[in-house]
Structures are given as structure tokens and as C-alpha cells.
Image (cartoon, rainbow, N blue to C red):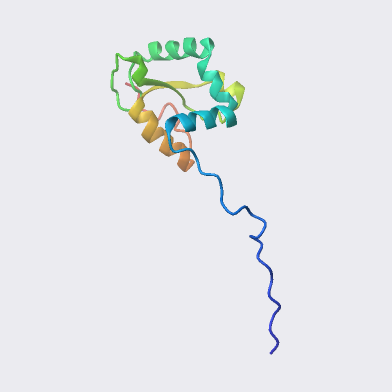
Length: 126
């Protein structure tokens, strides 16, 4: 029986190594500003006004765990539906107030896993 000819590697054209993500927070912030221009929208006066409207509407209460937080720097005005850089979705909402632990752990984990958006009628309101 004849041997089949050996095919060359299709990986030969790839770079030897891929660039690593920055390990420090300052490096990650620089990367996000350069590669995700919508990050700048969070630094506008328009966003700060909208954020305060949502925090006030929700009485500075996390809509997931019910924690009431007087320090607004520990609260996040969260997009219920991820905007993924879409300007219209970014400004239109819907929005909810989350404490930083709920936003930075639970919500980010759900979005990374690709979980669907929970309907507002199914989400507990405190």
C-alpha cells in the first residue's frame, strides 16, 4: 500500500506568539481606550447626568442583592442589555443600579458566558 504524501503545516503562517493582555489596571485601561472608543462615552457630562438619574431612581439600591449604598462611587449604572459599542443602545438603556461586587463579578461572568438578558419582570426589584 502506498503512503499518502505529507501535507505542510497550516500553522506556519501564524506569528510565533500572540500579544499578551496587559497585566496591570493602567495597562488594561490604556488598551480599552485605544481599542474600544465607546469607553470614552463614560467620561462625558451626559453620561454622568444619566448615571445620577438612574442611581436616584433606584434609591442607590442594588437591583440584584438589595444593598443600599450611600457612597455612589461604589455603585454602577449598568446597561441591562449589553450595548457592545452600539451608540444608540448605549444611551437608550434600559439601565439598572448595581453594587460593584454584583456588577464586577456576577454580571460580568454572565455576559462572558453569553447568558441571555433576564427580563425585567423576572428580575427582583428591591
